[in-house]
Amino acid sequence: MQPLVQQGIDAYNTGNKTEAVRLLTMAAREDKNDEMAWYYLGLSLDDEPRKRRCFQQVLALNPNNQQAQNELARLDSLTASASLGDSTQASQVPPRPNFSTTDSGAGFKNPINVEGAPATLTIPYIIGTTRTRIQQGIGIYTTRDMDYYYQAAQGATMWDSVFMVAVAAVAAGAAQLFGRLIGFFFGGFFQGVIRGLVLSPVVSAIAAVVGTFAGFFAGVYLADMYLKNEKINVPIAQQAMYYALLFLPLTLVGAALSFVTNALGFLLLCLLPLLLPLTFVIAIYNWYLLRQAMERVYNLIGSKAWIAAAIAIFGGFLTSAVLQGIITGIFRR
Image (tube, rainbow, N blue to C red; front, side, top):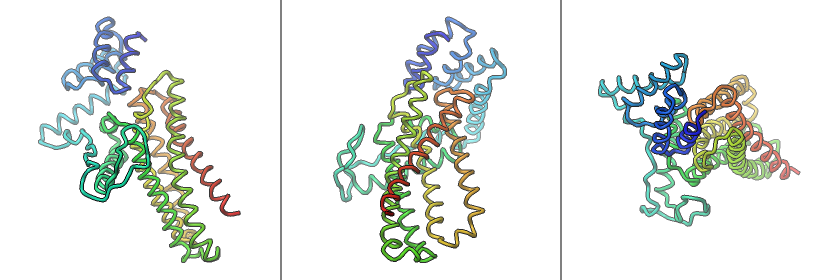
């Protein structure tokens, strides 16, 4: 691969599309048969006709390039939607939170000090930003629109991903707390009042919050180690945001299942044949979705994309599960 092409790909992966266009244009001029140069130039350009010409050039060099075929199909879909007066094209620009921390409402000092974090948080800011981030995550999770996903992560700071993980952690903790409180009256009373109504719900909620944070960042840093080994260097804040956009809806679904599991008590035995396969399917779907994202964002092809996604998801899951097991085990003694 030409040095210019690799430099252009690196610039694209870090969000510097202007530099990517410059480098990849030079590379394509030097070698008109460089398939990768034309493909990444097409991804980096914002002008639709020029993007289309780049992907057509890729297919002229390699008619079996599935990624270029997909990009052309997407452009055709957007053109068709625009001609019908559809709002689909406008929806390609993800909404970004725009709630000022000085909005009216009770404010308090932000306990988290990371890049991009506001000094003060207000209730309108928390509610508005949470709503926007959940909508973004669910939109990506349900539509699998990788361009929307890529754009939603651009310009992110570490605070953006930390905020989303905090939302996920609160949901996971609340599911444990309230699920176990309700479950006490559906068969959990054999634990005793203190353990069933106080110790078990509170400790499990704390373990879920800590495990959610630990699992997320373990997944991010483990995947980062693998990507660096593959010569892909992306700012950790950007990579954390890529994962957070998928992690949030996954955790919300997991929290809902956890709440149902804990709340049903003995009644859960009747629904286990449904809940267990559903949990498995969700985990596999998220693995597939993150693999697709890794392929789109980092150009990891084939097994490398699957491996990177598996490291992030299952590495984070195991970290979270082990940590939660340790915390709950300590308090059971």
